[in-house]
Image (cartoon, rainbow, N blue to C red; front, side, top):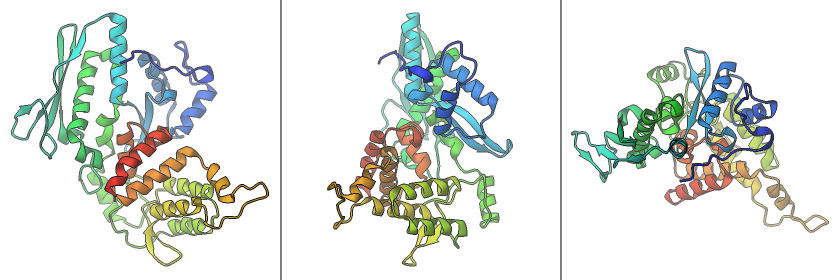
Length: 367
């Protein structure tokens, strides 16, 4: 594995002596999903962490994730990377220090306490153990499945944790062991696999949703795709009516972003043919409908099909996201945002169109 860290040139390069984000850097960070809830202290700490770990946020090696915190009354932002980011830091340190480095075989434990060096059962293991070797010292860590598993609103493991539970919990154990072996280099940054459980719905969130089903709940997660929503939200219906009047995919994408920000994608709406449907599914279907050239599309004076002009103007990333959401809907997958982030190893906003389409292709055969 290469120990070189990809560095961004020009105005986005992070200097070792830098004490604050430049305007150009701050603008890119904001576009990556860091909103106005972030504090100056969180941004300053993130800059220091990027400098210390030499992981580049503009190459998507490390990112700042915001999660609602009831006690703080706002989003609290936590630095995250993937397990590959941990490995890059470890290999770079070893290359610079000349230390010996390696792993013992990963082990998994069943509910009866029996350890195995390969996991074959269909059900998830109870725990995983990883041991990192550095200069002859052993740094072992055990991660319990129940403490890290990411669940949906019904308390069931999300798709990644259900189908690849052994791999997911092994990543958590490896992160724990690497942080023991490299405490200075990895302190303060956690992997996406470790933080997945932070997105689980709490008992309090479930109680709030049952007690006040008609009220806007800023702490609740999105409505699951397989649950029936009683009644219709007028704000969601307004978005649906705007989408029905739209004439190009760009307008649909803008409506989708607004509805997502308002937390309305899971609300039930009544479509033009009076069919009841979730707003998110309706907007995806409407966007795909407008993006598909009509069979009798007319050509302009230069012989260019108008529908193709509209298609060419679509942002490639957002088009890929639409494809992925359509595949997830067809496969009836739950908790799209969290599942996509876990599968991609980063927020969907930061993933490349190629990676998003590759994930869509993996989902589609099961649809």
